Length: 212
Image 1 (cartoon, rainbow, N blue to C red):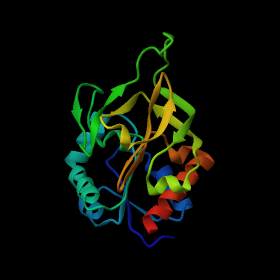
Image 2 (image 1 turned 180 degrees about the horizontal axis):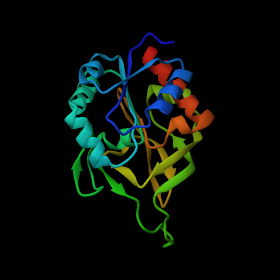
Image 3 (image 1 turned 180 degrees about the vertical axis):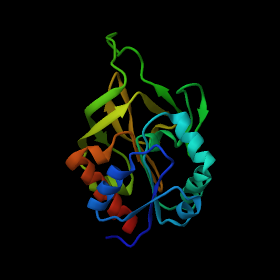
Image 4 (image 1 turned 90 degrees about the vertical axis):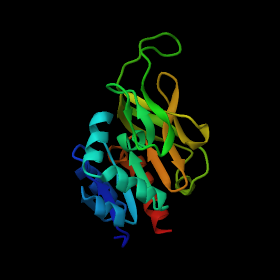
């Protein structure tokens, strides 16, 4: 097991058990915690998430976890966001009215369109397996294949203001950002803990990144 302290942030609505087990399979020993001070002390932070953006943002703020996560990121320690943990990085979400996010990355989170480029009705939420094409510069990408197949469950997707933060792309009603990265931040819209071998490869890459 890694000696690094990995804080798995518990804000009351994440699929924590399956994420913790998946991290353990990659040699990590995550501390599931809702304690902001424990998050601040961690060597790396993982923020998973399911459910509504507004509820998650309110819960993080109510526990002081939003500021703790910002401080970890600003200190240059690794951050891995999963699903809602990617969306929360951005300035705001349109889900259930405008809700501010962590403001780490410029951009917003918006619902998928009702129709695709051909005019056909698009089934929302986007649920199931889909290909992700990786490209860009980040230590995580050095250990990932150029493309892999992951499991998605989401009705909203990030619309980054800066294209250079997008390091993974998927097509569903058009191309959208499936992975984003900047410096010590890496986040994915899909669920590695539900993505079998592909998810294991990604979490293995995370384990190597934080050890280095």
